[in-house]
Length: 312
Image 1: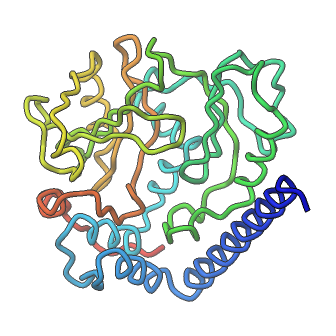
Image 2 (image 1 turned 120 degrees about the vertical axis):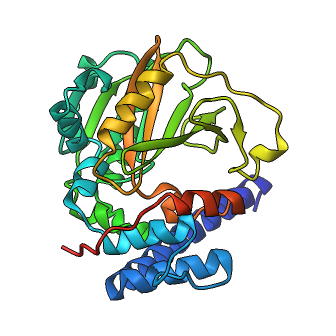
C-alpha cells in the first residue's frame, strides 16, 4: 500500500470516528434532555465547575441564567429568540429601521433562488445558534454545500443541544439578510448589550471574528469610559475598542426592547453610524460561561431579579 493510500485510509478512519462521536454525543444529550432538562442542566454545570448549581437559591450569573432557562418559560422568549419572529416584535415597537434588510424567507433550502441574491449575503436558520452562513462572494461559493449545511441544521432540534428549552417551540426557517459592510477587512464588530429589566448595564464587544470561529471579547461600562473586569482573557489585554458611532441609538433601542425580560442580551452592529439589531439572546454561552470572571458572575448575578416561576 502506498503512503498516499495509507493517508487516505487514516482520513477515512478519522471522519468515521468524528461521525460516531457526534452521533453518540447527540444521543447522550437528547436522552438526558428527554429524561429531565433540569438534570441535563445540573450535569452540564457539574462538568464545567465541578459542583452542582444552587438553583433553589441561585446567586451567580450562570446559576440565575439556568434558573430562567428552566423555570421562566415565557412565550416572548421563544418569539424574540427566533431570528424571524423577533422581527415582528421589533416592528410592533416602531423600530423596524434597526432590522437588517430581509432578502428572503424559506422553509427549505431548495426554495432559495441564488441567482436572485446579491454577491454578498447572510443565510441563517432561525431556530438555533450558530446556524449562519456568511457569503462574501457568491461566485466563489459552493452553493450545493451551502444547501447541504442548511438542510442539516433545519433537521436539528437545537433545544436538545444544551437544554435551552425556549428553542423547542420555534418553527425552523431559513432567512436571507443583506450582508452588513462596515468597510473593514473582516466581519463587523458586534456590540452585545447586557440588559436587566429594561436597563442596560454594560456592553461586550466582539472583535477579530472570523466567520463562526472564536473572537475576542471586552466589556465596557454604560458610559464607555472604563473596561470592566468581566472577561478573564480581556484582563490580559491593553487593547481599547472605540465607542461605536451608533452607541446612543444602540442603548436606546436595547432598553426599549428589553423591558419585559429579567435578562436579555441585545446584539447590535454599528453600520454607517446606524444601529442594526442582529438578535436577542436569552442564554448566552448556553448559560454556562467559565470565561467570565468571578467579579462578573457576582455583579451580573446581582442584577437579575428572578420573577415568579412560569412553566407553561
